[in-house]
Length: 439
Image 1 (spheres, rainbow, N blue to C red):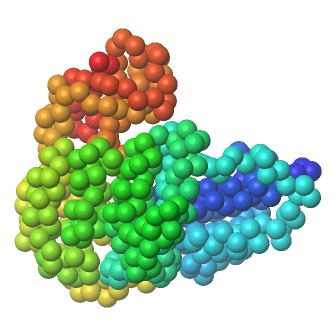
Image 2 (image 1 turned 180 degrees about the horizontal axis):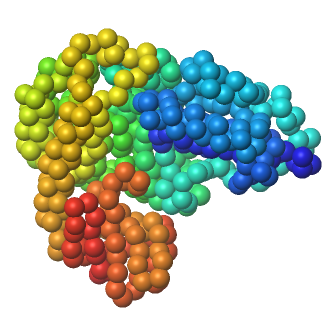
Image 3 (image 1 turned 120 degrees about the horizontal axis):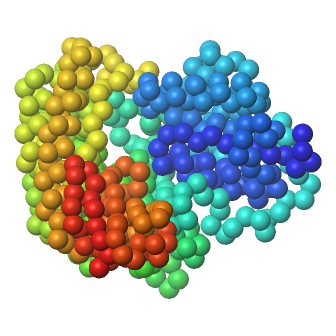
Protein backbone atom coordinates (compact mmCIF):
# COMPACT_ATOMS: atom_id res chain seq x y z
CA UNK A 1 0.00 0.00 0.00
CA UNK A 2 1.33 3.45 -0.91
CA UNK A 3 1.98 6.03 1.81
CA UNK A 4 -0.91 8.11 0.46
CA UNK A 5 -4.11 6.06 0.10
CA UNK A 6 -5.30 5.75 -3.50
CA UNK A 7 -8.95 5.36 -4.46
CA UNK A 8 -10.20 3.85 -7.70
CA UNK A 9 -13.59 5.01 -8.90
CA UNK A 10 -16.17 3.56 -11.30
CA UNK A 11 -19.16 5.79 -12.15
CA UNK A 12 -22.18 4.28 -13.92
CA UNK A 13 -25.63 5.55 -14.81
CA UNK A 14 -27.12 8.93 -15.61
CA UNK A 15 -25.64 12.44 -15.35
CA UNK A 16 -27.23 12.82 -11.91
CA UNK A 17 -25.12 9.88 -10.70
CA UNK A 18 -22.09 11.42 -12.39
CA UNK A 19 -22.54 14.55 -10.28
CA UNK A 20 -22.70 12.35 -7.16
CA UNK A 21 -19.39 10.78 -8.21
CA UNK A 22 -17.83 14.21 -8.72
CA UNK A 23 -18.87 15.29 -5.23
CA UNK A 24 -17.48 12.16 -3.58
CA UNK A 25 -14.19 12.46 -5.48
CA UNK A 26 -13.93 16.15 -4.59
CA UNK A 27 -14.27 15.39 -0.88
CA UNK A 28 -11.80 12.50 -1.05
CA UNK A 29 -9.21 14.71 -2.75
CA UNK A 30 -9.88 17.46 -0.21
CA UNK A 31 -9.08 14.96 2.54
CA UNK A 32 -5.77 14.07 0.91
CA UNK A 33 -6.62 10.81 -0.84
CA UNK A 34 -5.24 10.26 -4.33
CA UNK A 35 -7.32 8.99 -7.24
CA UNK A 36 -6.07 5.93 -9.09
CA UNK A 37 -6.58 5.38 -12.81
CA UNK A 38 -6.31 1.59 -12.48
CA UNK A 39 -7.61 -1.16 -10.25
CA UNK A 40 -4.10 -2.45 -9.62
CA UNK A 41 -2.74 0.84 -8.27
CA UNK A 42 -5.76 1.49 -6.02
CA UNK A 43 -5.96 0.60 -2.35
CA UNK A 44 -9.76 0.52 -2.56
CA UNK A 45 -12.37 0.93 -5.30
CA UNK A 46 -15.71 2.77 -5.07
CA UNK A 47 -18.38 1.69 -7.58
CA UNK A 48 -21.25 4.14 -8.09
CA UNK A 49 -24.07 1.99 -9.49
CA UNK A 50 -27.28 2.40 -11.46
CA UNK A 51 -30.37 0.34 -10.71
CA UNK A 52 -33.10 1.82 -12.89
CA UNK A 53 -33.69 -1.03 -15.37
CA UNK A 54 -32.52 -4.63 -15.67
CA UNK A 55 -29.72 -3.86 -18.13
CA UNK A 56 -28.34 -1.20 -15.77
CA UNK A 57 -28.52 -3.62 -12.83
CA UNK A 58 -26.59 -6.27 -14.75
CA UNK A 59 -23.98 -3.70 -15.82
CA UNK A 60 -23.57 -2.54 -12.21
CA UNK A 61 -23.22 -6.09 -10.86
CA UNK A 62 -20.67 -6.90 -13.57
CA UNK A 63 -18.69 -3.74 -12.71
CA UNK A 64 -18.65 -4.69 -9.01
CA UNK A 65 -17.46 -8.17 -9.95
CA UNK A 66 -14.69 -6.78 -12.15
CA UNK A 67 -13.50 -4.47 -9.37
CA UNK A 68 -13.51 -7.33 -6.88
CA UNK A 69 -11.60 -9.60 -9.25
CA UNK A 70 -8.93 -7.02 -10.03
CA UNK A 71 -8.67 -5.23 -6.68
CA UNK A 72 -10.59 -7.12 -3.99
CA UNK A 73 -11.55 -4.14 -1.80
CA UNK A 74 -14.78 -2.59 -3.02
CA UNK A 75 -17.32 -0.11 -1.60
CA UNK A 76 -20.64 0.16 -3.45
CA UNK A 77 -22.88 3.22 -3.62
CA UNK A 78 -25.59 4.62 -5.91
CA UNK A 79 -29.10 3.62 -6.89
CA UNK A 80 -28.56 -0.13 -6.81
CA UNK A 81 -27.21 0.35 -3.29
CA UNK A 82 -30.80 0.99 -2.22
CA UNK A 83 -31.30 -2.75 -2.77
CA UNK A 84 -28.29 -4.22 -0.92
CA UNK A 85 -29.75 -7.74 -0.99
CA UNK A 86 -29.38 -7.76 -4.79
CA UNK A 87 -25.70 -6.88 -4.49
CA UNK A 88 -24.92 -9.19 -1.57
CA UNK A 89 -26.60 -12.16 -3.23
CA UNK A 90 -23.99 -12.04 -5.98
CA UNK A 91 -21.10 -10.24 -4.27
CA UNK A 92 -21.20 -10.90 -0.50
CA UNK A 93 -17.53 -9.91 -0.15
CA UNK A 94 -18.02 -6.17 -0.78
CA UNK A 95 -16.79 -4.00 2.10
CA UNK A 96 -19.92 -1.89 2.40
CA UNK A 97 -22.99 -0.60 0.58
CA UNK A 98 -24.76 2.78 0.62
CA UNK A 99 -27.69 4.18 -1.33
CA UNK A 100 -27.67 7.13 -3.77
CA UNK A 101 -26.29 10.60 -2.88
CA UNK A 102 -25.09 9.21 0.49
CA UNK A 103 -21.84 11.16 0.41
CA UNK A 104 -21.04 11.03 4.12
CA UNK A 105 -21.77 7.30 4.33
CA UNK A 106 -19.40 6.58 1.45
CA UNK A 107 -16.69 8.65 3.08
CA UNK A 108 -17.28 6.84 6.36
CA UNK A 109 -16.81 3.45 4.69
CA UNK A 110 -13.61 4.68 3.02
CA UNK A 111 -12.32 6.08 6.34
CA UNK A 112 -12.97 2.74 8.06
CA UNK A 113 -10.86 0.87 5.50
CA UNK A 114 -8.29 3.56 4.70
CA UNK A 115 -7.80 6.12 7.49
CA UNK A 116 -7.62 9.70 6.33
CA UNK A 117 -4.14 11.01 5.50
CA UNK A 118 -2.69 13.14 8.27
CA UNK A 119 -2.15 16.22 6.11
CA UNK A 120 -4.98 16.85 3.66
CA UNK A 121 -3.96 19.10 0.79
CA UNK A 122 -6.93 21.36 0.26
CA UNK A 123 -4.95 23.47 -2.21
CA UNK A 124 -4.82 20.51 -4.60
CA UNK A 125 -8.58 20.63 -5.10
CA UNK A 126 -9.77 23.28 -7.58
CA UNK A 127 -12.57 25.60 -6.42
CA UNK A 128 -15.03 23.96 -8.81
CA UNK A 129 -14.23 20.52 -7.38
CA UNK A 130 -13.29 17.32 -9.23
CA UNK A 131 -15.20 16.90 -12.48
CA UNK A 132 -15.59 13.89 -14.76
CA UNK A 133 -16.71 15.86 -17.83
CA UNK A 134 -14.53 17.79 -20.29
CA UNK A 135 -13.36 21.18 -19.05
CA UNK A 136 -15.79 23.20 -21.16
CA UNK A 137 -19.12 21.78 -20.00
CA UNK A 138 -20.54 20.59 -16.69
CA UNK A 139 -23.71 19.11 -15.23
CA UNK A 140 -25.44 21.30 -12.67
CA UNK A 141 -27.72 19.26 -10.41
CA UNK A 142 -30.43 21.44 -8.89
CA UNK A 143 -32.35 18.90 -6.81
CA UNK A 144 -32.50 15.32 -5.58
CA UNK A 145 -35.38 12.87 -5.68
CA UNK A 146 -38.84 13.06 -7.20
CA UNK A 147 -42.43 13.36 -5.98
CA UNK A 148 -44.05 11.53 -8.89
CA UNK A 149 -45.35 7.97 -8.60
CA UNK A 150 -44.86 6.73 -12.17
CA UNK A 151 -45.77 3.06 -12.24
CA UNK A 152 -42.64 1.96 -14.14
CA UNK A 153 -40.17 3.86 -11.96
CA UNK A 154 -38.61 3.23 -8.53
CA UNK A 155 -36.50 6.40 -8.39
CA UNK A 156 -38.56 7.92 -5.51
CA UNK A 157 -38.02 4.79 -3.42
CA UNK A 158 -34.28 4.92 -4.11
CA UNK A 159 -33.61 8.66 -4.07
CA UNK A 160 -36.53 9.95 -2.00
CA UNK A 161 -38.90 12.82 -2.61
CA UNK A 162 -38.07 16.12 -4.29
CA UNK A 163 -35.39 18.04 -2.39
CA UNK A 164 -34.43 21.27 -4.16
CA UNK A 165 -31.03 22.80 -3.51
CA UNK A 166 -31.11 26.41 -2.28
CA UNK A 167 -30.97 28.82 -5.20
CA UNK A 168 -27.89 30.54 -3.81
CA UNK A 169 -26.01 27.21 -3.65
CA UNK A 170 -26.88 26.42 -7.26
CA UNK A 171 -25.84 29.88 -8.47
CA UNK A 172 -22.60 29.86 -6.50
CA UNK A 173 -21.68 26.51 -8.01
CA UNK A 174 -22.52 27.82 -11.48
CA UNK A 175 -20.27 30.85 -10.93
CA UNK A 176 -17.39 28.65 -9.75
CA UNK A 177 -17.78 26.51 -12.85
CA UNK A 178 -17.82 29.56 -15.11
CA UNK A 179 -14.68 30.90 -13.44
CA UNK A 180 -13.01 27.52 -14.04
CA UNK A 181 -13.59 27.75 -17.80
CA UNK A 182 -16.93 26.02 -18.23
CA UNK A 183 -18.83 27.31 -21.27
CA UNK A 184 -22.00 25.22 -21.02
CA UNK A 185 -24.16 24.25 -18.05
CA UNK A 186 -26.44 21.23 -18.39
CA UNK A 187 -29.15 21.66 -15.78
CA UNK A 188 -30.31 18.27 -14.46
CA UNK A 189 -32.57 16.72 -11.83
CA UNK A 190 -35.36 14.15 -11.81
CA UNK A 191 -37.93 16.88 -12.56
CA UNK A 192 -36.29 20.18 -13.41
CA UNK A 193 -39.51 22.13 -13.93
CA UNK A 194 -40.63 21.24 -10.37
CA UNK A 195 -37.62 23.02 -8.89
CA UNK A 196 -38.58 24.82 -5.68
CA UNK A 197 -41.99 23.17 -5.28
CA UNK A 198 -40.90 21.34 -2.11
CA UNK A 199 -39.74 24.69 -0.68
CA UNK A 200 -43.07 26.27 -1.63
CA UNK A 201 -41.06 28.54 -3.92
CA UNK A 202 -39.71 30.45 -0.93
CA UNK A 203 -37.81 33.65 -1.66
CA UNK A 204 -34.12 33.81 -0.91
CA UNK A 205 -31.87 36.81 -0.41
CA UNK A 206 -29.42 37.24 -3.28
CA UNK A 207 -27.38 40.34 -2.53
CA UNK A 208 -29.91 43.14 -2.20
CA UNK A 209 -32.66 41.20 -3.99
CA UNK A 210 -35.32 38.75 -2.87
CA UNK A 211 -35.55 35.98 -5.48
CA UNK A 212 -38.18 33.26 -5.55
CA UNK A 213 -36.91 29.66 -5.69
CA UNK A 214 -38.50 28.42 -8.90
CA UNK A 215 -37.87 27.11 -12.39
CA UNK A 216 -38.21 30.44 -14.17
CA UNK A 217 -36.14 32.35 -11.63
CA UNK A 218 -33.40 29.73 -11.80
CA UNK A 219 -33.30 29.96 -15.60
CA UNK A 220 -33.27 33.76 -15.46
CA UNK A 221 -30.39 33.94 -12.96
CA UNK A 222 -28.31 31.34 -14.82
CA UNK A 223 -29.03 33.19 -18.05
CA UNK A 224 -27.16 36.22 -16.73
CA UNK A 225 -23.85 34.34 -16.40
CA UNK A 226 -22.93 34.51 -20.08
CA UNK A 227 -22.93 30.73 -20.50
CA UNK A 228 -24.85 28.27 -22.59
CA UNK A 229 -27.63 27.01 -20.30
CA UNK A 230 -29.34 23.79 -21.39
CA UNK A 231 -32.43 22.42 -19.63
CA UNK A 232 -32.86 18.67 -19.20
CA UNK A 233 -35.70 16.50 -17.78
CA UNK A 234 -38.33 19.22 -18.05
CA UNK A 235 -41.89 17.99 -17.49
CA UNK A 236 -44.42 19.76 -19.77
CA UNK A 237 -46.15 21.83 -17.10
CA UNK A 238 -47.85 25.08 -18.19
CA UNK A 239 -45.23 27.25 -16.45
CA UNK A 240 -42.49 25.88 -18.72
CA UNK A 241 -43.71 28.49 -21.21
CA UNK A 242 -42.39 31.17 -18.84
CA UNK A 243 -38.81 30.45 -19.91
CA UNK A 244 -39.53 30.85 -23.63
CA UNK A 245 -38.88 34.64 -23.61
CA UNK A 246 -35.47 33.89 -22.06
CA UNK A 247 -34.78 31.55 -24.98
CA UNK A 248 -35.96 34.15 -27.49
CA UNK A 249 -33.58 36.68 -25.90
CA UNK A 250 -30.64 34.28 -26.08
CA UNK A 251 -30.30 33.97 -22.30
CA UNK A 252 -31.11 30.25 -22.26
CA UNK A 253 -30.55 27.80 -25.11
CA UNK A 254 -33.74 27.11 -27.11
CA UNK A 255 -33.60 23.43 -26.20
CA UNK A 256 -35.86 21.31 -24.02
CA UNK A 257 -35.39 17.71 -22.97
CA UNK A 258 -38.93 16.58 -22.11
CA UNK A 259 -39.64 12.95 -21.09
CA UNK A 260 -43.03 12.50 -22.81
CA UNK A 261 -42.77 8.67 -22.62
CA UNK A 262 -45.85 7.95 -24.78
CA UNK A 263 -48.61 9.49 -26.87
CA UNK A 264 -51.58 7.32 -25.93
CA UNK A 265 -53.69 8.86 -23.13
CA UNK A 266 -54.65 5.36 -21.95
CA UNK A 267 -51.04 4.23 -21.63
CA UNK A 268 -49.98 7.50 -20.00
CA UNK A 269 -52.70 6.95 -17.41
CA UNK A 270 -51.42 3.42 -16.75
CA UNK A 271 -47.94 4.89 -16.41
CA UNK A 272 -49.30 7.46 -13.90
CA UNK A 273 -47.43 10.17 -15.70
CA UNK A 274 -47.81 13.73 -14.36
CA UNK A 275 -49.70 16.02 -16.73
CA UNK A 276 -50.87 12.97 -18.70
CA UNK A 277 -54.24 14.62 -19.29
CA UNK A 278 -52.66 17.72 -20.81
CA UNK A 279 -52.72 18.24 -24.56
CA UNK A 280 -49.00 17.93 -25.04
CA UNK A 281 -49.21 18.40 -28.81
CA UNK A 282 -50.90 21.78 -28.35
CA UNK A 283 -48.21 22.69 -25.85
CA UNK A 284 -45.43 21.79 -28.29
CA UNK A 285 -47.08 23.86 -31.03
CA UNK A 286 -47.39 26.86 -28.71
CA UNK A 287 -43.74 26.55 -27.65
CA UNK A 288 -42.58 26.53 -31.26
CA UNK A 289 -44.85 29.43 -32.14
CA UNK A 290 -43.07 31.47 -29.45
CA UNK A 291 -39.56 30.17 -30.29
CA UNK A 292 -39.52 28.74 -33.85
CA UNK A 293 -35.94 27.42 -33.58
CA UNK A 294 -36.73 25.45 -30.39
CA UNK A 295 -35.14 21.97 -30.40
CA UNK A 296 -37.02 19.30 -28.44
CA UNK A 297 -35.70 15.89 -27.47
CA UNK A 298 -37.53 13.17 -25.60
CA UNK A 299 -37.56 9.52 -24.59
CA UNK A 300 -40.32 6.95 -25.03
CA UNK A 301 -41.23 3.49 -23.77
CA UNK A 302 -42.82 0.93 -26.09
CA UNK A 303 -44.33 -2.37 -25.03
CA UNK A 304 -45.67 -1.08 -21.72
CA UNK A 305 -48.08 -3.60 -20.11
CA UNK A 306 -51.45 -3.32 -21.81
CA UNK A 307 -50.12 -1.45 -24.87
CA UNK A 308 -52.19 -2.53 -27.86
CA UNK A 309 -51.42 -2.05 -31.54
CA UNK A 310 -53.94 0.80 -31.46
CA UNK A 311 -52.05 2.48 -28.58
CA UNK A 312 -48.80 2.10 -30.47
CA UNK A 313 -50.32 3.61 -33.61
CA UNK A 314 -51.51 6.56 -31.52
CA UNK A 315 -47.91 7.01 -30.41
CA UNK A 316 -46.67 6.96 -34.01
CA UNK A 317 -49.33 9.48 -35.03
CA UNK A 318 -48.40 11.66 -32.04
CA UNK A 319 -44.72 11.54 -33.05
CA UNK A 320 -45.55 12.44 -36.66
CA UNK A 321 -47.38 15.57 -35.50
CA UNK A 322 -44.91 16.51 -32.74
CA UNK A 323 -41.91 16.40 -35.13
CA UNK A 324 -39.41 16.10 -32.28
CA UNK A 325 -35.80 16.82 -33.15
CA UNK A 326 -34.18 14.01 -31.17
CA UNK A 327 -35.72 10.94 -29.54
CA UNK A 328 -34.70 7.80 -27.69
CA UNK A 329 -36.88 4.72 -27.41
CA UNK A 330 -36.68 1.88 -24.89
CA UNK A 331 -38.53 -1.38 -24.63
CA UNK A 332 -40.43 -1.67 -21.36
CA UNK A 333 -38.39 -3.61 -18.85
CA UNK A 334 -39.83 -4.78 -15.50
CA UNK A 335 -38.05 -3.23 -12.54
CA UNK A 336 -38.17 -4.92 -9.14
CA UNK A 337 -40.45 -2.86 -6.92
CA UNK A 338 -42.29 -1.03 -9.72
CA UNK A 339 -46.08 -1.18 -9.53
CA UNK A 340 -46.33 -1.64 -13.32
CA UNK A 341 -45.17 -5.23 -12.81
CA UNK A 342 -48.61 -6.09 -11.46
CA UNK A 343 -50.45 -4.77 -14.53
CA UNK A 344 -52.10 -7.34 -16.81
CA UNK A 345 -51.41 -8.00 -20.48
CA UNK A 346 -47.62 -7.79 -20.62
CA UNK A 347 -46.40 -7.42 -24.19
CA UNK A 348 -44.28 -10.28 -25.63
CA UNK A 349 -40.59 -9.49 -26.12
CA UNK A 350 -40.73 -10.00 -29.87
CA UNK A 351 -43.60 -7.51 -30.16
CA UNK A 352 -41.70 -4.97 -28.05
CA UNK A 353 -38.65 -5.32 -30.29
CA UNK A 354 -40.72 -4.95 -33.45
CA UNK A 355 -42.44 -1.82 -32.13
CA UNK A 356 -39.15 -0.29 -31.06
CA UNK A 357 -37.76 -0.83 -34.57
CA UNK A 358 -40.83 0.75 -36.18
CA UNK A 359 -40.72 3.69 -33.79
CA UNK A 360 -37.03 4.38 -34.46
CA UNK A 361 -37.58 4.09 -38.21
CA UNK A 362 -40.27 6.78 -38.01
CA UNK A 363 -38.13 8.91 -35.69
CA UNK A 364 -35.11 8.64 -38.01
CA UNK A 365 -37.13 9.95 -40.95
CA UNK A 366 -38.28 12.94 -38.87
CA UNK A 367 -34.74 13.60 -37.64
CA UNK A 368 -33.33 13.50 -41.16
CA UNK A 369 -36.01 15.90 -42.40
CA UNK A 370 -35.48 18.40 -39.59
CA UNK A 371 -31.70 18.28 -39.98
CA UNK A 372 -31.99 18.78 -43.75
CA UNK A 373 -33.88 22.02 -43.06
CA UNK A 374 -30.74 23.36 -41.36
CA UNK A 375 -28.54 23.03 -44.45
CA UNK A 376 -27.34 26.48 -45.48
CA UNK A 377 -27.87 27.96 -42.04
CA UNK A 378 -25.13 29.63 -40.06
CA UNK A 379 -24.92 28.45 -36.47
CA UNK A 380 -22.77 29.10 -33.44
CA UNK A 381 -21.17 25.90 -32.20
CA UNK A 382 -19.10 24.76 -29.23
CA UNK A 383 -16.03 22.66 -30.09
CA UNK A 384 -15.85 19.34 -28.23
CA UNK A 385 -12.83 17.72 -29.87
CA UNK A 386 -10.30 18.51 -32.60
CA UNK A 387 -8.11 15.94 -34.35
CA UNK A 388 -6.13 16.81 -37.45
CA UNK A 389 -8.36 18.35 -40.09
CA UNK A 390 -11.64 17.50 -38.38
CA UNK A 391 -13.42 18.95 -35.37
CA UNK A 392 -16.52 17.67 -33.58
CA UNK A 393 -18.88 20.35 -32.30
CA UNK A 394 -22.42 20.96 -31.14
CA UNK A 395 -24.91 23.78 -31.60
CA UNK A 396 -27.76 24.81 -29.30
CA UNK A 397 -29.72 21.86 -30.71
CA UNK A 398 -27.30 19.11 -29.60
CA UNK A 399 -26.60 18.04 -26.01
CA UNK A 400 -23.40 16.06 -25.33
CA UNK A 401 -23.48 12.27 -25.28
CA UNK A 402 -27.18 11.88 -26.16
CA UNK A 403 -27.69 13.85 -29.38
CA UNK A 404 -25.87 13.94 -32.69
CA UNK A 405 -22.93 16.20 -33.49
CA UNK A 406 -21.60 18.59 -36.12
CA UNK A 407 -18.46 17.53 -37.99
CA UNK A 408 -16.41 20.51 -39.17
CA UNK A 409 -13.90 20.14 -42.00
CA UNK A 410 -11.97 22.38 -44.35
CA UNK A 411 -9.88 25.48 -43.78
CA UNK A 412 -9.14 26.75 -40.30
CA UNK A 413 -10.08 23.55 -38.47
CA UNK A 414 -6.56 22.92 -37.18
CA UNK A 415 -6.73 26.16 -35.19
CA UNK A 416 -9.83 25.15 -33.26
CA UNK A 417 -9.52 24.23 -29.59
CA UNK A 418 -12.02 22.27 -27.44
CA UNK A 419 -14.09 24.80 -25.53
CA UNK A 420 -13.92 27.39 -28.32
CA UNK A 421 -17.03 28.83 -29.89
CA UNK A 422 -17.08 29.08 -33.69
CA UNK A 423 -19.42 30.19 -36.45
CA UNK A 424 -20.15 27.54 -39.08
CA UNK A 425 -22.34 26.95 -42.10
CA UNK A 426 -24.21 23.64 -42.25
CA UNK A 427 -23.43 22.02 -45.61
CA UNK A 428 -24.79 18.45 -45.34
CA UNK A 429 -26.57 16.02 -43.03
CA UNK A 430 -27.24 12.35 -42.51
CA UNK A 431 -29.83 10.77 -40.22
CA UNK A 432 -28.49 12.17 -36.95
CA UNK A 433 -25.34 14.25 -37.61
CA UNK A 434 -24.43 17.31 -39.63
CA UNK A 435 -21.39 18.44 -41.64
CA UNK A 436 -20.23 22.04 -41.61
CA UNK A 437 -17.47 24.43 -42.63
CA UNK A 438 -16.12 27.42 -40.77
CA UNK A 439 -17.60 30.73 -41.84
